[in-house]
Structures are given as C-alpha cells and as structure tokens.
Length: 194
Image (cartoon, rainbow, N blue to C red; front, side, top):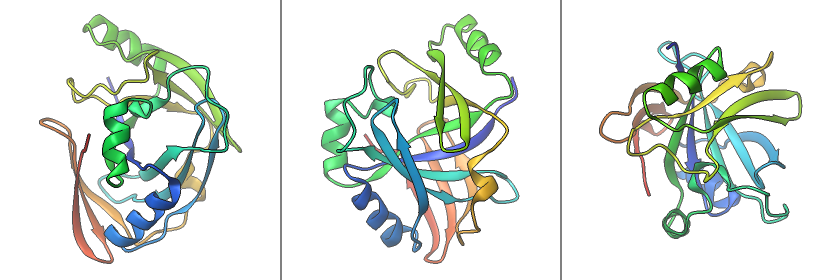
C-alpha cells in the first residue's frame, strides 16, 4: 500500500500555548490554519517540506473553546482525560497522518490485517477538501504505531504555504514516534507524548 507522511500533529491545551511552543522550540511562528466544525477543533500550520518529505507540514491543534461540542469523539484522542491532563503540562507531538491515493482501499487493507482505522469521513476547511479515516472513539493507533490515513482532494495545504525555515529531516514510527527537524534553533528532535 502506497502511503507518504503528510503531517505531524502537535496537540496543545490551547492554540495560543501551541503557538508559543512552536516559537520556543522551533524558533518560528506557525502560519494560519482554521477551524474544523466537524470536530470542534482549530489549528495553525507550518510547512516542514524537505527533499525526503515533500508536501509535509506540522499541525498544531487544540479544542476550539468557541465551537459547540461535536456529535462524535474528537480526533487524535483529544477527548481522552489522560491526553488532556498531559497537554495541560504543555504541548507536544501526539500523532502523525499519512496520505494515501485511495482511502477506501487503504482502510479495507488494514481491516484485512485486523487493524480498525475507522471509516472514511468527508471534511473540509476553506478551499481544502479531504477524506480521513476516523475511528468512532477518536483513538489513535498507538499500539500499532500506525498513522491516521488521509486522502486529499485537488488542493493540499502546502500548496499555499510559504517556506518556514523548518525542514523535516527524518521520521521514525517503529518503537514510538520520533521526528528530526532542521530549525533556526538547530536540529530539534520531537518524540511523541501522552
């Protein structure tokens, strides 16, 4: 099954804390993002594309305090008490997302392997349209060290993003999620939390 790293997900108790974390740890201010009405979350984005990982970005995500509660569990375990307690101590890398050319086929393939990566859900923000594999309980596939799967429409977030001065150098998801980034502060390694 063909899949490529699409983006890293940094969770934060508030979006403001996530922006401050990005400025402190990576040395840059993330670009604009938007709101996800489906999930009651909002985000800011940072282009981290590089030769080994084209069209890659970092997403800083938090529960939107102005949004009504969603009708389903939020993605990336954001409703789970353990992760919320951990994010109250500060933002950090919580998951990753891989893009696939055919989400239905990819989800069916994993189901055949005994992995429940959820159902394909349609989502949008501004001119961006995508389909994403979401479990009913919103849980990450941490034990399996597997990403959330996404299939983009015609536009991809990095298409309109400026170079940020941060590049993804390397990425590993075998014994826990780790990412190495070249930043204005030098090389930074992020490791999954919570």
